[in-house]
Length: 294
Image (cartoon, rainbow, N blue to C red; front, side, top):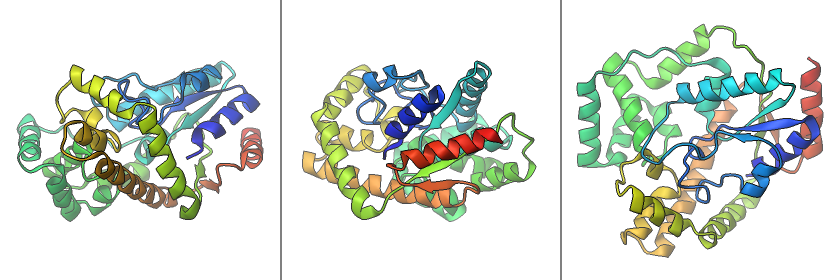
């Protein structure tokens, strides 16, 4: 939490633009639930790659990195500082390091994995993934249908885990056309958890259920990629009458805490990151100034 305020501060200080690097904030139907910057915040400086994808479509890390990387280079050449903001660690790695060229998955394997998803549900397949690719399972939410299916498809097709392919890219990646300063914002749980609870309450007050209801009227298909994110899945269960409000919000909070833990585990492995508290704006500014000198 605190990424939006930090990014706006740095954008003002360095004539910057903000490029989304969050796999959930791409969806146009869910600006509230995915905590996308508000229209007022987006008006403060140019923002890119927020809310551009329908809930029924998915996007790979590689494709997202192509879009974000292209925008970053374009803005840099125009004299503006690209500020890539978001918590999806795989997207960051794809942008900075690139991803290995994974062999295509045959259609019959895709159909089988999707059939298993429909028959058993994402939690069962998540447990299956944990036995063949525990690192991927640890970073994915148990209801993230799209990414669980992708990781299993890769393992069945290649005999190697998705984690192995990502590590292979780190060993063999060509030089990327830009450098990156990674500022990792975090705070102790005793400060973070109450803020998480408050943010969920504010999202509900801001119309989270109405947001899901409108999306469901357009696309009544809970297997659609947009519904798989934390918040969307729980509010959809509430909207469909499968959970009471309090139960859904408690699950949303638990899943958000689990996601924070997965994010911390991921970013601890990122060499060269700088850990900061969200309020350390002057230190962030100093770090960016020093980085730009190099």
